[in-house]
Image: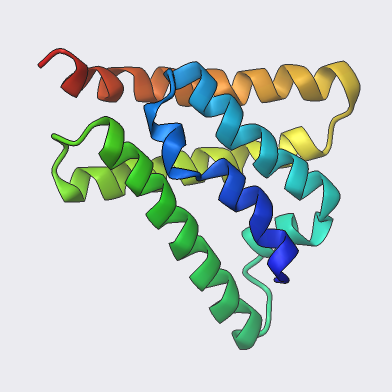
Amino acid sequence: MCSNSDRPHEAAFDPDVAELPLEVLLDRVVDPLIAFNLANPAAHVLLNSADVSPTVAASTRRLHEAVLQRIEAIVGARAFGLPPGQRARVARVIFQVFKGLLSLVLSSQGRERAALVRELKTVLRRYLEPIDRLDRRR
């Protein structure tokens, strides 16, 4: 992917987002990633396609690993008491939820798309709230 493709990821995964309230954090991460996928339909295909050349598969795998590391860093900054294995698991779940619902979001338009984006954020928020509260109580 070209360097322009990294800009939404840089904005979405800016280290400062970890300090934001959870709802604002989700807006700052999810919205640019959806906008990127809407502007670059091939990105979604690469994100979910198993039927690609070995070269493309290797590049896609590196991208997935980079995204997972960024998600894990945000989770770790918010819930620093989570053991590393659990942080990695939470990051994988977040990534899979996003990937799973992204197809629905991209295939819809207008109000329905906006409603599905809200649903995606609700799922992520409800999954993350108990994790997010772990260190906030201490």
